[in-house]
Image (cartoon, rainbow over all chains, first blue to last red; front, side):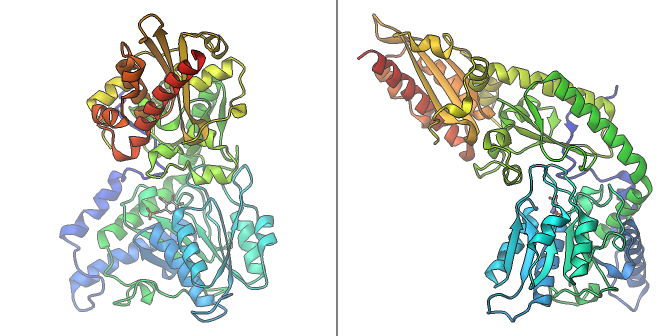
Length: 412
Length: 132
Ligand SMILES: Cc1ncc(COP(=O)(O)O)c(C=O)c1O
């Protein structure tokens, strides 16, 4: 059925650029190549018009005004700007002092939030890293419970990139607004897949990225609320004063135009796409659970993005498993995939044991995923898990009735 | 990170997979030494069993099982292949660096070869303990 190998099921890592996005970008290299900041000739005006159109497309996707969109180089930069910029703007005390204000985030955030938060700790801010429950969902109650008199900023991602779990974002935003606390959400995995309205959903700062929504890499945006309340951040990249001074640099016009087009396509196709992906993922999850025993889905069963599945396959190691399904590209929470030997900190924070974290795969579907690809993945994974279990001493021990946790392992 | 041909060969068709009986059975046998190293929390567990010809003192057969990444599985396969036919002293000489070279392991995978060396030593020690 026209299956091309290898099959790409790692869309939470990045996506293929939609051909319609590429088409929109191409003229920006050779025709609309002016600097949008050039005010005195048609080259500049044309580029500015292209950027404005993209700004409107990005705004529309999240229910914002075009003026509330600041283009960035992606979600990492956006998160840095949101956290550091808001902390600096709303600090209770000047630099050099301690107790400059309290910030709430969570342990299973992306590193692009965690590391700026840790930097802010060093800069005199107090940070609470909420421990997620086993299902990964941060509730408004949990945020409320962590609020202090001096809380200035809450940063909670909308959906988690490893397990897809969805935090209680509109409610968390309401809790923040009740107390005049700024609310930022890293919506990199959410926006473009799920309906978003920054006003209805009580958001002050929202960051996302082009390459997760079938746009180019190295471009993204930050939403900055202008009314009720007017939110401000201190610029982190200073220079020519582009993006109303919030983010200097000559705009990446091809990237921005591609990002805008990607946003527009998501606005148009999100609803049908969501149902399609959910049906495919349900098939994947049900089939694997039926054909393989000792599996566990990590994260919340329902409160989850339709395109992400994180599953642990007991007694089998994740990287070995990925190698065995070499025609299917996925991710693993196993340590072996990274330079550090620690397994996924996200799974760890949920209380998934290190052994099951090492046994996990993240499979993420996207716009170009077909049913034939899912069928192929089911077949491959089922075969590989059974094959690797025949190699696994842990599987033998389990079948001999030995409790693996009772063994005094000599770690190395 | 691309893997070497040797590594892929040993991963896809590992030599000497298996055991000489259940955990309980091999414990009772004086001619078999078992080494289990690593830990599930660390993402790799290697189990190596050696069967010693008690008249010659040579390792006549070896079997492994491995929970781990491709490099760990391939390292176990190489280890079992190399120790067959060797005396215990000769097998003790095998260094993890030999396995690194054989499989062209990248730096992040060196611990897999260390584990393989450790499993050989642990199996020999277990055999010697049974036979003192
Ligand atoms: C939740 C989340 N935040 C931030 C990022 C970083 O995005 P970018 O690659 O655009 O910097 C990613 C993607 O890796 C992500 O999934």
